[in-house]
Length: 157
Picture 1 (tube, rainbow, N blue to C red):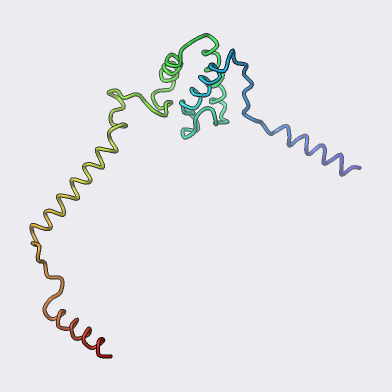
Picture 2 (cartoon, rainbow, N blue to C red):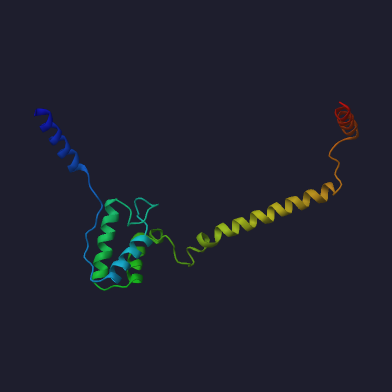
């Protein structure tokens, strides 16, 4: 009986430490629920940095979800909510930042680096062809004779 009571006490202590990130919001209609889901998937958790706020268990993500729900309840548009979050946390909070003067490098940088790399490789190959010509000898005359001897020896065996 004592073991049973200790087990129950241990289970209650353990259960009290477990927290779930479940938001129980009541939406006016399915369209508002859809907007909420879309917004929480589009915005990045400032703490987790690689998770959207819908999936994050961080306290700041819970606060942001609550703030989004409040703003939706007030009738604000998706763009107003996103602008509020960007003003508060910076462009980093968006998974897909807008194309503007501050983010052009983020959008075009990888493609530009890939293009520059391709041009550099092309120039290196062309320079190598020009300096060595097309008929570069792979083996010296001595190496070629030795190779023929070895090949001839192997065909007769």
